[in-house]
Image (cartoon, rainbow, N blue to C red):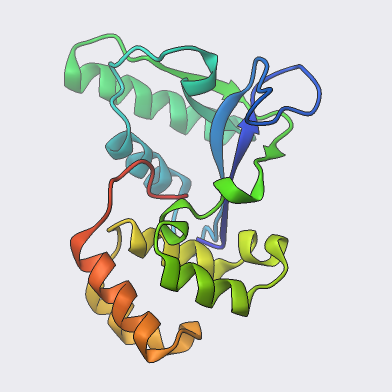
Length: 187
């Protein structure tokens, strides 16, 4: 992943916020390098991260795949059809064209890292400007590891490059080894 950000998409009312979300859906925006991971691979991650047959509680919590071009639409539709064939049930996931994305408030970004006070303090020192933290590739990767996603051996090999103190590195390894409550691997 190059960058992940949480926010709101798919609606029409102007300037949504968490407390005034209107007709938007909470979503994750993913910037990725297609030389490293394909759109099809991202779709596989999506399907492993949602319960596709669970009805959602309203527009705010809908499961939606937003596409940016005809190829993404085709791949998303094929992946949904594969899920229907595999499960033999109605899939409660919409596939819609991407529209304007509104970034969520800073306190919603990098959820797993914010759960750990030590890591949050260290990363605030590294990224004192909140948009730099939100847009950081390192923060996106560390957040995934803090959520229990990723290969621990890869984390150990790259950990010295992330700018954390020795105590912060050990804290991240401990958290990554346990994994936290999994909501979405991309946050």
